[in-house]
Amino acid sequence: MPAVSRHSAKRDAILSALRETTCHPSAEWVYLRLKPEHPDLSLGTVYRNLALFRRRGDICSVGTVDGQERFDANTGVHAHFICEKCSCVQDMDASLVPRESYSELTAQYGFSPRTHTLTFYGLCQDCVAQEKEA
Image 1 (cartoon, rainbow, N blue to C red):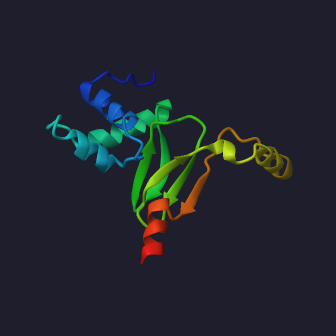
Image 2 (cartoon, rainbow, N blue to C red):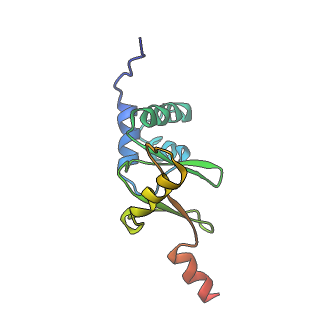
């Protein structure tokens, strides 16, 4: 029989912190954000709850940026952009990528995808502007 996850104030706070930001935070960010309100919160508790939220489909992983896994509470269809200079992670409108690309890939390789991620890497608008000024 699968383990039943108990409802807790800390669990609610962790999920709320993820849903209230668009910065695609790391576990450490969530921990530091919530520690003042929840002094007995541990980093291990944050990691365990993030794993639970991923299994339940409440959040997704954006990937590892600067050695830290980053998370997103927006589980709808969208792409990501990761700046290689400042490490910011931004949501992008996935509709900018033609849907025909997906069916062409499926036809060419014969797979049947359940899901996919699309991530672009480069310099964000702010970092491009800083480089132009330098």
